[in-house]
Image (cartoon, rainbow, N blue to C red; front, side, top):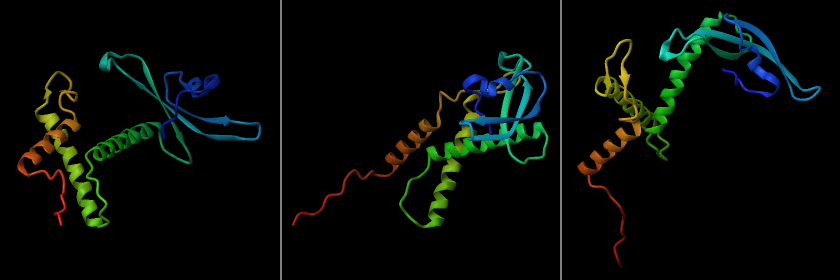
Length: 170
């Protein structure tokens, strides 16, 4: 998991130096008898002028009983970040229900992932511009919540919206 780079008296920031990736141990001490020691992995990546930035960028990870190389940790966490982002987006367009039927709930999760993928495709194919290096994607012009609002309006026009239920008199 990534480590937080702030802290009192240097904290983890003291390890953000040098030009090579390395492993070390770090001890957090709260009281005299209350401390935790763990492995700290510092990964250095060169920006190489990407996004007009130069120099070294540091990524710090806390690991326990892992035998692998430093670059694998960096690549693996980048993939995990993508997975967590897609789940966060899925939760934005999740259909909320009190139904306990697992098949129906799974269908709703599938629909929300499908809506996210449609939005990503629309961004890539219609709301982006090719340029040297990579595409320029205009996320602010067409946000996911905006697409969901468009879909909601279209469904409300197509199907009559029930705004209230009135009991018969008598």
